[in-house]
Image (tube, rainbow, N blue to C red; front, side):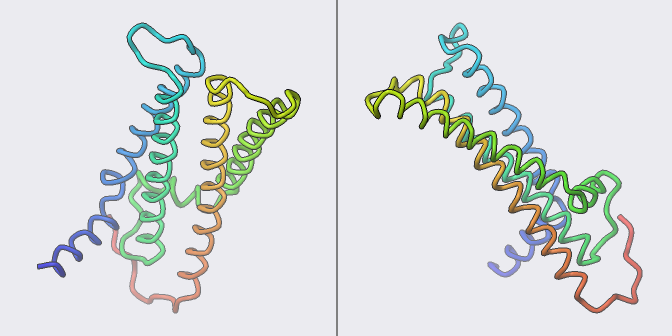
Length: 183
């Protein structure tokens, strides 16, 4: 039934976030990052490997989507841990440390500023030409990574805020007298 399917999906979301989201997201982000770096370092192409601006746009989208998927996995790990459904698996304790550290929002601010610098540099370059026509190829090779960095940086800052809010929401709940089961 629909209800059983939804219950099973919720079970997978909470108890298999590494295999369902973290690892596929990491593979997508890494493969897309390789494509993006190749597109930035070899604008004329790399043999038969396409590295034009369209490929670069899809690669940037893959990086952003993969990163968002990894953040979703971290949120599921944290929700399960904060709800005291099970003790954190030793392979997932890094997610708890990440949620408690300032690194996620600091990296997010740094990435957002880097992306903003790329976007502003292109706007500055456009202004210096009297807001005339720019080479679409050259402009897109600057703006695509700039927007991707802005998106990833903003997602990082928002995820840090969300993780802190989630921790606060679960900390406000009445303390459980039952010990947490181990994984």
